[in-house]
Image (cartoon, rainbow, N blue to C red; front, top):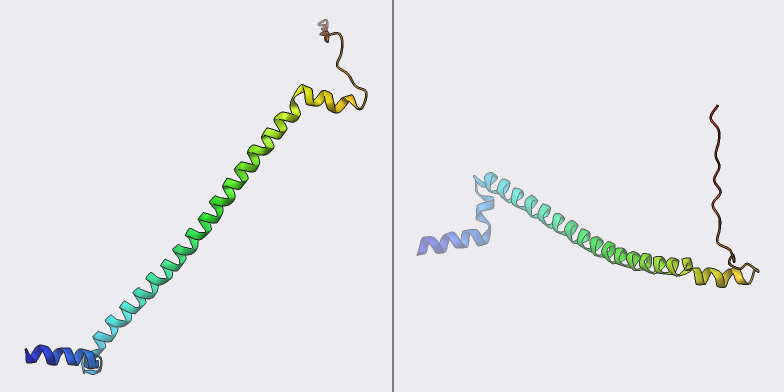
Length: 109
């Protein structure tokens, strides 16, 4: 039990970093710190991408709604009744006789 207690005190005091064989311990610690920095960096990058994706999805839904509204308005503008109302002010009325087809025939030489 005394050996375990002494080992625990040595770890808490940082003796494993100041011993003669501490170089290998420092290499492992530096490696772990570098890995932790990489993990933290990738986590922040992932969070930024998630926020950007949510903003783009919101914008996409707004643009879809705008597209639907525009297409509905265009469909209403194409109706014959709305066209008649708009050209009535200019003095244009629908034809009383239906249009006739004109056939053009050419002779081969």
